[in-house]
Length: 157
Image (cartoon, rainbow, N blue to C red; front, side):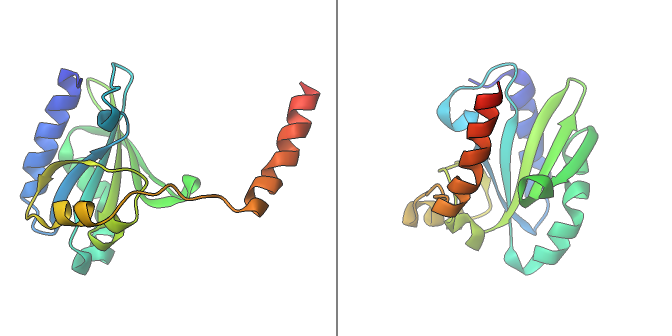
């Protein structure tokens, strides 16, 4: 169940995104998918764009975030390995929103099935119907690199 602050933000975002012809959809992920939202929940939103505008959108993603509501602070997600992500704080009232900017082809590779909040055409729903989410499996080397550090940390505590 969404709170009024979440509903208000999504309504405003749909209105503004639909006016930009480069943008083709607004999707929701995270706790909204699972119906587990509460007063501490952020919004995990995906803004889908026409691939012809990739460079332009990636250069302007913070500006696009500024246009949605009163943006207090924002930074990109390179530190978590996701440069398409913009982590935003809006307010008042305070609201944490993660905006991920992806093209339609990138939507084929995803970790969850998002909720379609708005789309310009039926192509996004078609992509979601034709493909399935898959969580990437870490390699054995990735796990070993972290296993021994974890063991040492547990032993020290």
